[in-house]
Image (tube, rainbow, N blue to C red; front, side, top):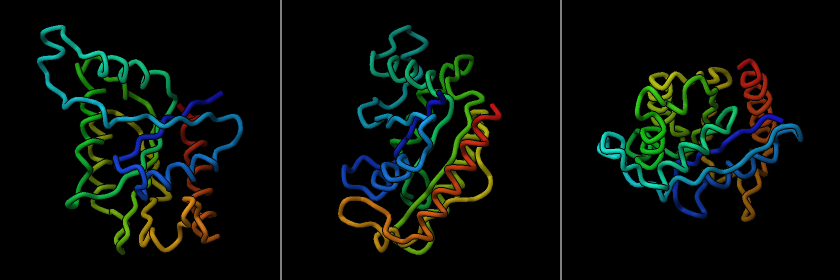
Amino acid sequence: MAKVGILIGSLRKESFSRKIALFTATLFPDDVETELIEIGHLPFYNQDFDEEDNVPSDVQSFREKVKTFDGFLIVTPEYNRSVPAVLKNAFDIGSRPKVDNVWNNKPAGIISQSPGGLGAFGANHHLRQTLTSLNMPVVQQPEMYLANVGTFLDDAGNVTNESTVQYLQGFVDTFITFMRKF
């Protein structure tokens, strides 16, 4: 059984990113297990942790957990035309020390979303730059920018627009095919 970790770039419990992530997780087939990976509790990465052999237990647990996944779905908003700090920090923590990069060769799919019209385009592309440096292959097409996200989510977090559901399903199907190549 394939195992996909889901990283969410927003800490707000009712965030659009969380709702989209939870809804998208329901679109994966039965032979793919999905699991949310919480990142809000992680301390900011400090190289001294590794150099002084004093890695906090939360950091070590996170690194070990990431190693158990076959691929990652990342759902994120955009903060100031870039990636939220909490998400970038999670990638920094897992990539150090560089010889033990837990992200290495793990495929990823990115869904960026915004309540506005751009669909968090800036965050999506900044994240692609980071993932490239971590040697994480990323689904290139279809690109997933969900704009005006508040208009197609109901109170329970379900996507109410059928064409958006089909778009998400197509992305999930492509991601699974892509992930299985690795």
